[in-house]
Image (tube, rainbow, N blue to C red; front, side, top):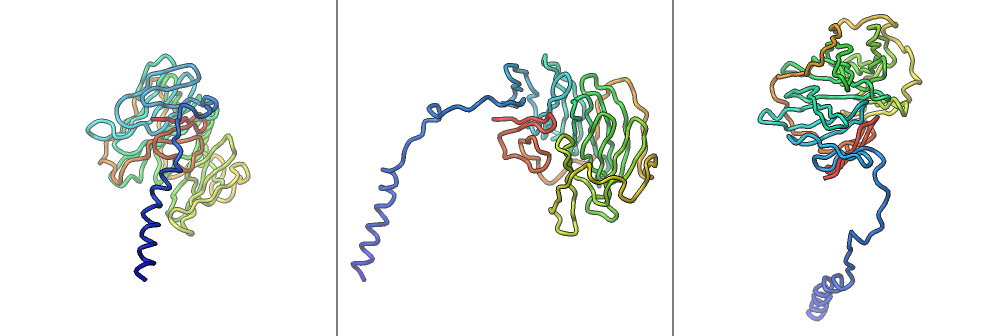
Length: 289
C-alpha cells in the first residue's frame, strides 16, 4: 500500500511539469485578423464607424450605443455623484447634446430609419409611472409625449410606439400607440418587454411560467386580439403636446437601487452581451474596452 501511494504521489507531482512542457505560447499579434466591425462601435471613449472617429462621452460607464440620423446616441450610467443614467446625442462632427438624464434607468428605442428616438423615464419612488417621449434625435424636437402607468417601451417606428402594459401584473397587454394620431390598439394579451421591428420579432413576458421566462413571437402575426379598438385611448395615459424646442428630459426621484446595468449591449434586444463590448441593435452598437 505504501508503494502504491508513493507511486501515485510521483505521478501527480509530474502532471503540472508535463502540462507546462506541452503548453504552447500564443502571440495575439500573429493570429489571422478578421474583417473590421461592420457597425459603429465604442472603443473606450471613442466611437468608431468605419474610418470615422468621434469623441464620445467621458463620464460614467458606457452601456449602449445607437446609430441614428445625423449621428449617435450613447447611454451612460453611474454618471456623477448622483450616479445618474444619461442619454446623449453625439453628431458625426462630435457635438454633444444631453437628451435625457435621470436617477432612475432611462430606456430608449430607435426607429429603423434612425429618424425617431423614443425615450422612457420613470418618476415616483415606486417607479410605476413613466413618460414615453418621441423625439427627432438630430434636432431634439419633441414629437409626442405620453405619461403611462406600468408601461414598458418595446420599440418605435416612424409613426408608432410599441408598449407593453402591466408586465408581471394582472391583465397584461401589448399595444401600439400611433403618436401622430394619438390612437391606441391592443395586439396581444401578454406584455411585450422588447421587440425588433426590422426582424419582425417581439418578446413577451410570461410570468405564469416563471419570473424570468420570456417568449419570442412574430410581431406582425398578432393583430387586434381583444382589448381596445383603434382610436381608443388608455385611461391611465396622459398626452402632452409636442414642442419645437429641444429640452433635456430629466427625472430626479429617489436613486435607483439594485446594481448597475452591464457595460455592453449588442444588436439584439434581448440578452445583454458580456462586459467589455457593445454592438448595434436597430442601429444600436457595441463597444470594446
